[in-house]
Length: 149
Image (cartoon, rainbow, N blue to C red; front, side, top):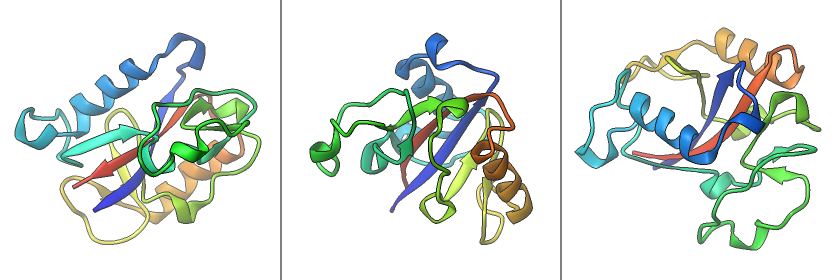
């Protein structure tokens, strides 16, 4: 199953962050890489890619694109559509229906379901984080992660 996770890096800036750093942070904390590693916080996925199927989900004035995959190759050059951006550069709110969970550096919040593998199912916290991001009330970098498990 593939699912989208919005990864929020509070107080980071896109100019000082690269794709490999984001991959490393997410991997060490949440991905067990098909059994090759033991994540610090929880086993959220066995494989992931920044962007992936949702590589054009973030509407922003600036951002970074990621290597295209079979499912989004035709979208790779869409202006204003990115996989990674500063919260401050968002030009449209992120649709909650397109996000399965929101991850921070230490926790993952799901909007529904039961507690699973350490993910906190807390609709109020999910809604607050997404509202703060969409309202640009927080500073940081966001990345769409295509997760598989």
